[in-house]
Length: 114
Length: 110
Image 1 (cartoon, rainbow over the protein chains, first blue to last red):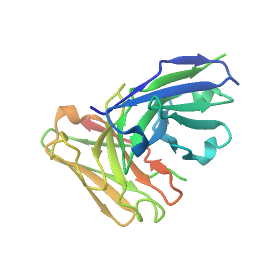
Image 2 (image 1 turned 45 degrees about the horizontal axis):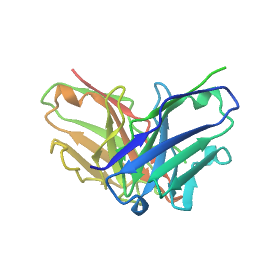
Image 3 (image 1 turned 45 degrees about the vertical axis):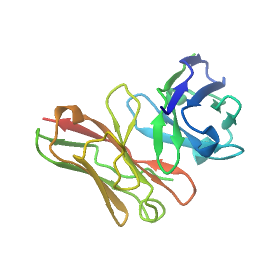
Image 4 (image 1 turned 90 degrees about the vertical axis):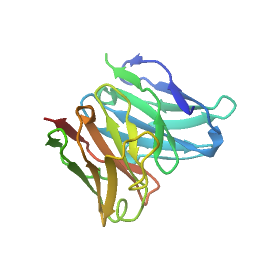
């Protein structure tokens, strides 16, 4: 079955960077994009960007701090966020991106704390 | 890109129907049929319930239905069940080749 499995929880200090991975299985990885969505504690969903091969698009508010990449040899997508702040504390999800987002990974909690 | 507008909360008794609205603009909901709805019980990842305005993925009960008129999409849940209690989010593709979510609606089954 189609499945996305994400890397484990991270604790980072303000100003640091974090890189979250998302390994896809059960479908042709290059046929779909991967979107990244985050959810701060008690808050709603926030779309961060999508990546497909060498093409991508990021949410304007994250431009300059986020980079999304893929490794087609391992069917894995990556999301790197730099200059972490306390308000970046959130669960980060990846999702297969066609004309809708499905399925979703299990989520990766990133905590930013000094 | 501003978030789509959803009511913060809705409620209904078992067996009743509820409708959640999702209002966007002519740059997102009004221009694309790439409107989807996601269900998120506490502590879990979102689950796709409706895609492309009104289509149900395999396994989603036909109690869930979607529609769109102009810049507003709607999710209707009929025959409410206790297990439907969750947060619901709408999403739309936009003219900037991005996705935008609604703020979320908490459904309480009384």
